[in-house]
Image (cartoon, rainbow, N blue to C red):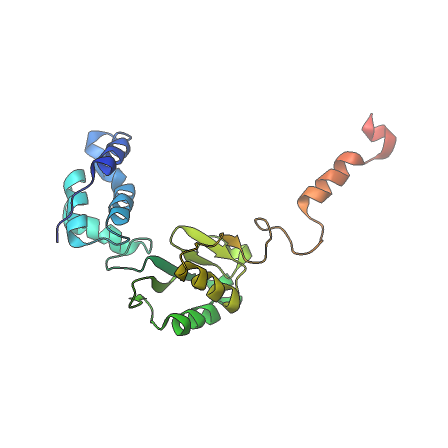
Length: 204
């Protein structure tokens, strides 16, 4: 196998390197790994790691140490749709284990395995940063929140059909807004503006 950055990616790399002094080029390691991974089909082969190391001017082993630490980097091939199920406490309490089991059964693969058609891979990761909307799953770059097993399997079927579904809440709420018609911060603020505290004297 061989790997070399495309001309377009080389331009992106120069932009990142230009943000740091020449003796601090390793500060651009994370974005360069991301560029390499995207160009390499979603994972980092050894030649890709070597190419990053050469650009930055550090040992390949140091690049490998960083790439193997973060779950956002993959050291073996992943599916076209990489399904990452959050397993941190809030998601676990809200049914993440059930989501993971449903995925394994539906796709017919285990953790960090790729389906035979190359479309899907699945893995458990730590916090995806949307705890209030647990359980959460990330597919490639998109978050899908407020999930249950049927909702997640419907998303996978849409992906298989080549139709990437709309991300965010499966229950249609905006950000972390409450369900139904419960009071929210915007409604409370609107009431405070219309009716200042303290009556007429306070309004003056």
